[in-house]
Length: 316
Image 1 (cartoon, rainbow, N blue to C red):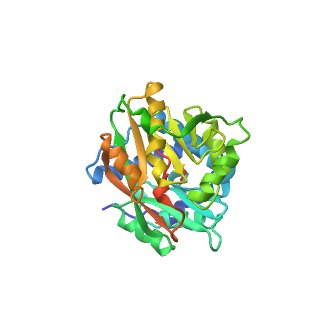
Image 2: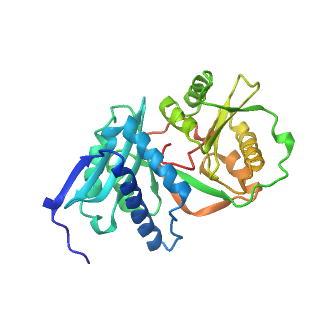
Image 3: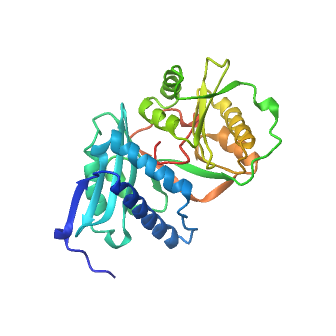
């Protein structure tokens, strides 16, 4: 058993710039793969896609939520970090990771305390996504008012069918671009209906990413009632539909677009309550990943039977 580290050697600070982006990504890989190894699961590879999106997310958080981006250091070495983002009516802990050698020494609790101090006002929905096999972390979050609420199913589609029925593509669809003035108000309307809050700053981030394509669907091209982001790396999400009946159509259109662009596989993060999406993906040969995460929340919110989370970054 390792000896506790000298608490006097620990220091906490806000992220200071680009040098902290890569180092916290490396720290995440070390902490996440330690957990996966203990659970006898496959380790996360340091892929181009994973690194690129992780660094882009950190730059986004630093630009818009710098007071929620905290690092822990011991004798000048980074040993943990936490990132929280705050939107109007919604607070999310996007990341909290501590190197294995420093776990159990209060580092995670102190990082969480500092992240909670950023933007978590009374009445705001507070959320975090956590591994189901992390009882210590989940108890820590519960002590701060975020309770296990809903399973999140990670679905992998190893092969995208090439014969998707055109009859499933009944809604009018179009690829949208960041320069389209009508896009952000439409996304806000859908988010308000599905999630109960809006996040235009995050949509601007997704729209500007070179690997993401935004698909809008609705009864007419200028009346979108659903959206989905499709990544050239294979991740699909976030996705939202005003009606849960439209989720399979939305996913079918995404997969059709992925096929047309030469993609061979796809991945999704699906709330356990989104049964129409789960049933559709399973019918196509989707497989549940070995890990399951939990959405912890201070209270119920939105209509997550109409929603899929981002499959490519730490944003909700």
